[in-house]
Length: 423
Ligand code: AMP
Ligand code: GLY
Image (cartoon, rainbow, N blue to C red; front, side, top):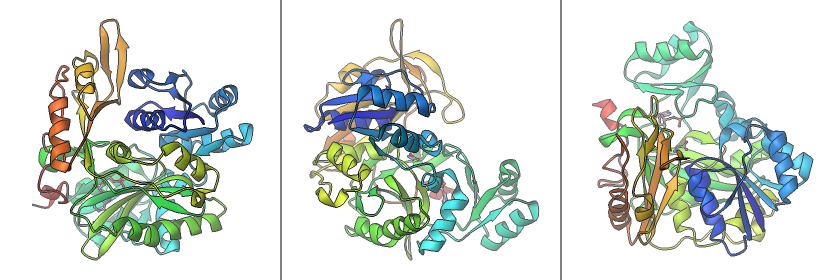
């Protein structure tokens, strides 16, 4: 099977790496990719937001499967364009189904219609509506920009004035009930009608240790979750994913791809914080490290509506931990062009992969080129072992004013990130 992965970051690096290690996959192409991916796959300098150019590349390469990594091209309709122009199987939802991430209001409406457990919410556009909703749900306040905002559209705060100011700045927002409990990422591989869950993961969203500071795209992750109910994935498929797939099917927008279910495990059970229309990064990285069955066949079956013909994904024993190395200023800004050393040494450690998220090749070698620069992923016997391996490999890497958390996957596990907000 010839495959093409679309995107530039850590998620795409991890996906391409798993595909390259799948014996049924003969070729891995990535557009545009990054220097880390270029070490083992063929890169093509094509912009993911240019659906026509991507479709032309797909036809040219005559691949059997396209895997779309990021949400922006999906919301832009890349999956529809590739399917119409080339007939090649695409793992990733079409434009209409990608609205589950593209519009928070739409996703809340689908959840309500499908009876999916989630936070009570109001979609608001005027000051009077903002105020009424903030008072209805009380503090802590949760205000979400309705539009795609790369994880930066959400404010969770005890301060009503700050919540109101965020709503005013966004315009159309979803204001909702605060969900109290640890967060879990569950990735469901969907073929439009059926779904298989991957092993649950947890990511660490805040920039500083102890869950302090602003939200980021994710500073680290681990899987599995030894503290969680072993029946969690099956429960989420039954209570969340299957009803959502049925609802999307009825709306004529069948969901094909990864449905990323962000959950809060509350005292009254798992409730959905958000849907995303793609794999989460870095949450998917440790999950893929432990996947024992082939990724190519699984994603191809989902993309062709034949999921039930392949075996459910199998995971090896042990655990995996990913630690993100970010540049100065992240998440507000990022620093570019700083020389990075030690990547080769870290990547050479047994059971470690250095995943590139924001790097570029400069005249003197690898340099920083984004907020999240690298992710160091290790596999071990259990979470503590994987964690120790990830940090000791990460210690080999340096660049100017590198930021990393020291408490990724540290005990106590399974507590609520950012609980300090409520002190
Ligand atoms: P989202 O972009 O919807 O995932 O929100 C970003 C982050 O804000 C989530 O990962 C949570 O940490 C937090 N968050 C969002 N919605 C809620 C909620 N209803 N209750 C508590 N925290 C939330
Ligand atoms: N790690 C969270 C996300 O990918 O949205």
